[in-house]
Image (cartoon, rainbow, N blue to C red; front, side, top):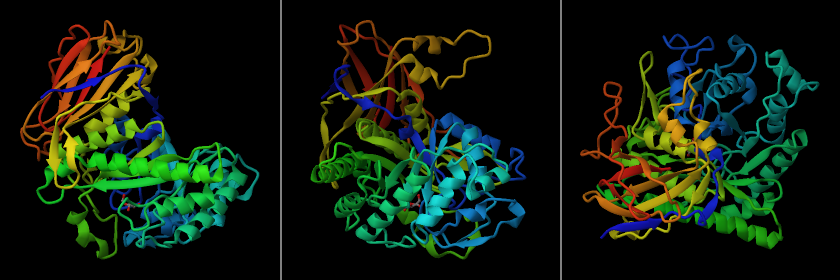
Length: 521
Ligand code: AHR
């Protein structure tokens, strides 16, 4: 049976906030040390940051990076990471039982993030610390000068304030593993008072309250209701976190996990809107999905209590073709909710469950999951369109009967896409760029069948004159194939023959177990 969908400019979801394509750098494992930062590496810049990693991050297209944690932030003293590096203390980080040398702190990270074209989403410590440390940090970062902390930043060589816009009020405070774990009410009160003080320093900021660490938490739902009950007027977003993995050999269920993600998002929206109704507020609290990814938690269970070391390799998942298809599908789920999910952060950026891998002293390469992210970030800018898919279904152990197809479309004005393309100095634009001078459409589609191609009939009657300009698919004869330092391009998206539009319809063939990007203009 064929699948079908309709692309119609009237079916709008909303505008994509570019921050949907955020990432996450935590002081965890080798994300910072021997990840983004490795002084002495042949490709390190004058600040000790690896230029090979920076250029992969730039190409990935991550306009926002959450920092510095994660569980790490709940024990972090940000003041340890400022001033002369030689004077900075080495601390015991209890989240990951690691040695934190503090060679990278707020100022170094800001410089690095600006260099890759990203803004920082800064998290404050509401585990071991609270209002005072948070208001000091925002004063250090966002005030121009004339106060103790802002003058200290100037003394540390940064005359202009950073103007960090988005701030997380702690991390996963519902989790018993979190240092300084709190009840929903305890956290809600602390978050509200911290938010108040931070806004008194800088009224222009946006704030994120912690939602549940995942939808299986026993407090999920009531946590959000209580926390937003205490913080509704102070915050702009509630956070969501979700990680998925294949359990045993049940790949069919794993391939459908974005359906669980959809339901999770819908439940948090409903809870936030319930609080809005009870409080009779006009304002809506939106979602910051600030940790999401594939993470094979079971593989790394033994790592939790390792000997205390500096930058130990932690949760360095190597991703397969299947994982990349799932990551692409999770991005489709985020896009489908773009009206309410305004911020997203794939966790994490380098080495730690990451699209970019490095070897110390050696190379940096793209995991399979890098590709759907980079292409969605590049082409998924503009207005999201619902596509009303009709699809054959299959049976899963976890979620019952689910569609084989998942899809969403994005309508982009030329500048949405072209803002990512460097114009060659003085030269003519390459043909592909000229093509997107007018509005273009990007259709993102996944075929969850492990065995069968899916013929997708696309109704394009609302787009006279449009043709398929390209079709790329991430698929492989071996769904377990991975990229490695020795073979970094084993898995890449491959171009397929663009099908012809006929009478306002086109049939696109989606390979088995594939993530697809079909571009129309
Ligand atoms: O991303 C890894 C960890 O997962 C983060 O530190 C924490 O917030 C989450 O549990």
